[in-house]
Length: 227
Image 1 (cartoon, rainbow, N blue to C red):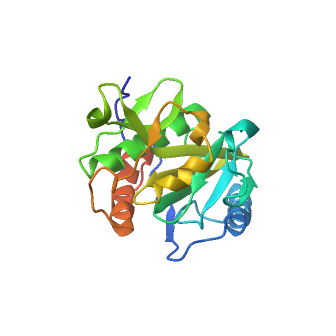
Image 2: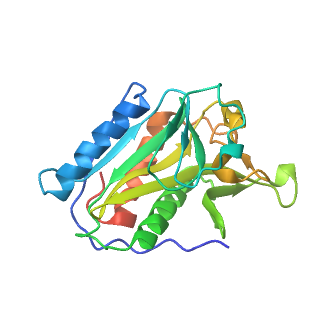
C-alpha cells in the first residue's frame, strides 16, 4: 500500500544543515548527536540535519535478533539505542541524522516516522524513482519487475530515537554503496527481499545530487524555508 505525500508541516523554522565530507566514525557521530540533542532540548542549540557517511559497519537496534548477524567478524558491530534491527552503514550511503524538537512541532512519534518515510519518497522522486511503503516493513521500497512480478528491494532505511521529544538518528539512503556488504546481516530482519541503490537502478547520481534532493524536499514535509 502506497501512502500519499503530506501537506507542508506546521513548523516554519529551518534547521541548520551540516554535511561531512569525510566518513565519520560511528561512535563519534553518536556522541555528537547526544550532545546536540541535549542542547536542543535545553534551548541552547538550533535543530540540525546532519548528512554524512560512515566507514563500513553494522548497527544493532533495540529489536535486533542475534541470529540476523550472519558475519559478526566482517565489520565492527555497534549496539545503538535507536529502534529497529540490524542495519549496514558505509561509503556510498547517505545517512541523514535528523535532530528536531517535536515539542515545538508535533509531539507525535508515529507522525514523525511517517514524515521521514514521505521525505525519502519525495527525494527519490527527484530521480524519477518511485519509492513505496509496505505494511509491516519499515523503510522505503522499489519494485523490481525485471527480477519478477512481485520482486521488491529496499532502498532506504529508518531508525530513530527520541529523548525529551528531541529526535535523533534518522534515515539512510543507498546512493552507491557496495551492496555485497549487506550480506553480513539480515537487513532489518527481512530476508525475503533484497537491497538496492540508485546506482543499482542504473542511475549515476553522485552523493551531492542526493544531498540536493534531500534538502530540496525537506521543507515540503517538515516546514520551514527550503535549505
